[in-house]
Image (cartoon, rainbow, N blue to C red; front, side, top):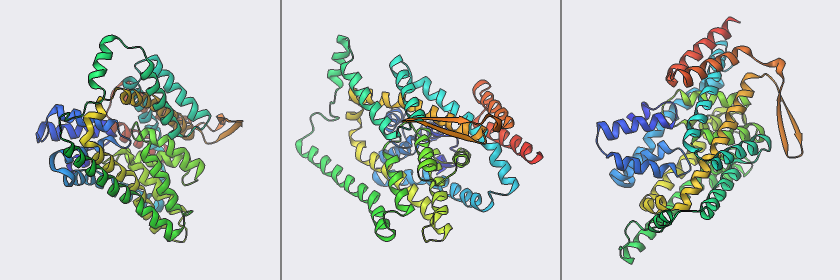
Length: 431
């Protein structure tokens, strides 16, 4: 809970706070084991900071510890986003709230741009990975290729490239020693059977917790109800969210706005601004999407009741898979980490995710800086053409100012958000 309350601004800050408290202050886990856990969690779909908290809880106190750590890491952000969502639907049209949200959006553009550069520096170490990033950007921005297809395609290309790439003799030797050694090569068959039975039990319980609530909702409301649609959609998102919250936002943002009509384009920026300025995982922005989409499409329920259920089902199907991945895979961490072909696949996914996040930055920027966008289609090609007479110079100036503060002068994210929001509020109210 203490880690969650002190964690703002995305997974990098959250992991840093976790390291300071758990490794340096409490000394509950040593540095190599912490890094080992982090490496494993970065291979998984979903929010790595929450999964890291769950994994460390599991290491220290088994399943109960993992549940306690993972749930308490999410709770502060859940209540914060829920409260802000209620204020949003109740007071969104008031001048003060409108001015606050207007000032927040340019800062969010700068934050997403900083994420592109930060992840790109880490992930794009070869021309091949740069090409993957460019290809993924073109695919999602101009051809609206679904994010899951990009992830699967990148994984396949990475696996294929790693398999057929030329290796030196030393690499081949190293691979032979690392290509899947079990953690305990001499363990008895009986122990392996116990581990397999445990995995089967965990999978059955996890899948039941994940999908039984969706089945009950479908039986009660019907498959076409917005709550069932949200449950299925965010379940798909939970499986392909490699690269963290920024990557899944590109997928969720376009689907929620353009396919389902749950939100308007600028409202995704409002939700991301809320998540950036509240404690807990950044992916809690999905809760705002679920609340607002269900609130506006109640389907026979009271709007607030529908919004609350939408928030709950979104959070449920987003985080239950995280617990499943940790509890199911933790005993096999070494096997996963030593698989060279798997590492190549995930490296390719991370490179493609850079292009997806770049698409998010461009998409957010266009919808923030321009009052109108025209969509032109030529077969499969889709072009977003801004109406230049609707450009907002003040929003552009704030976005440039926030970008300089973050990237050039290395000012902290919280200060940039606060400063840009205050300047934006003053400008918006003075007009």
